[in-house]
Amino acid sequence: MNKKYSKPTLIQGGMGIGVSSHQLANTVSREGGLGVVSLTAVTVSFLRRLMDKEEDYLNACEGFIDPEFVKEVTLKYYGMKNNEAYQMIEMPSLNPSAFFLKAMVLSSYVEVSLAKKGHNGVIGINMLEKIQIPTLPLLFGAMLAGVDYVIMGAGIPIRMPQIIDQFSNKEKANYLVKLNDSSQPQVTYEFDPNDLFDLEPIEIKKPKFLAVVSSLTLANYLLKATHKPDGFIIELPTAGGHNARPRGELVFDETGEPVYGKKDEIDFEGFRKLGYDFWLAGGFGSHEKYKEALSLGAVGIQVGSAFAFCEESGFTKEIKEQVIKQVLEDNLTVKTDFLASPTGFPFKVADVLGSLHDDESYQKRKRICDLGYLREAYEKPDGKIGYRCPSEPVEDYVRKGGNIEDTVGRKCLCNGLVSAIGVAQSRASIKEKSIVTAGNDAIFIKRFIKPGNKHYQAIDVINHILYNK
Ligand SMILES: Cc1cc2nc3c(=O)[nH]c(=O)nc-3n(C[C@H](O)[C@H](O)[C@H](O)COP(=O)(O)O)c2cc1C
View (cartoon, rainbow, N blue to C red):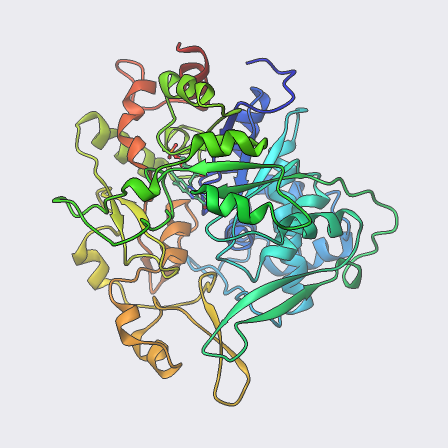
């Protein structure tokens, strides 16, 4: 790849939780692409890795703006696992402790620092608009580490460009957090980094902002703001993780998959006319599709599934081996689950043997909510703010005023996804099962695996996509 690019033609998509690991982003970035780390629940994975005594993470804390806090966090967590179980970690809320706020800042700082280590390439972060409460401290930590691109999907990230501006000027920023069951639809959550750190001696670089969109309408809306995105990633519904809902009436095909129709088609001519850079995502992980994207006027592509099961990705070795085995046997299916995600967005689930994809293992799992990244804030009858998640124990959700229908089929993505990257919680020696998300393109990873091999690397994906090798 031409390493003297001005704009990356290949973006390795942000894949949460932790599938877009710093190892993967670092590798892609060294090869001239835009390596992206996912910041979804990164504080959990970071603190659990400290509990597991992973030295890389400890070493990467060096250089953090608050060395005293690093000592504090190390004392509290480093090597501090209780037998097989991880210590509880504070859940995100609108009234976090100063300790947890700093831990969030440190966790994204570390992830980005590790991704940037040892090369001059560019690194991005991926966040979901839907997960609103941790956004500001995580963004700030990434900016302390000099992140080059901020990418946000799953919602309408209209305020992000302004917030990025404010943080690069060392100013406070605020985020509007959606509030259910209230006369006010949202509350303002303020984060002032000056309350936590002495910012005087440092410079903060302003990263570029790319919004993930699935329609020209949304792109046009984002461009109405005074602070605008620098470009767009146009994501089609074959992409892994969360997808946009089909527009118009919901229709399913004979296999139970949602049908995306005319209204969902991308107006490429409209995007070209906007005059902003755009990248295409969702089934573009091949040389032919890369060429097609360029011919449609895109700067390049964003690819997720193809990288998701390579050696450098964050999925556990066991999951990668199992997925590759099933793919080689033509036995991997990816389904769109409309109920699984507490966010209400359709969510792609791969039927990986041993994971929590089938009804039986889903029914067996005792519901528990102890990570809380997908909790929604709501107003209690006494005017105070509470938190609830449709995947938590049904009786708790209903007691908090939630509709029982909303709990049906909901999965604990927090625990399922952190389990998939090797930091599963153990309760009474029972480990949380993994949930594996992937795009429809996952079944094509065969093309990266050399005959006789049962694994592949990020460089195999890059060589195939960019150079048809
Ligand atoms: C395992 C996995 C997890 C994903 N998680 C996220 C996420 O947390 N945030 C996001 O914006 N996109 C997420 N995506 C979408 C990717 O960033 C990317 O846009 C998509 O994978 C591109 O389509 P492809 O999988 O066909 O290459 C995820 C994709 C995969 C495969």
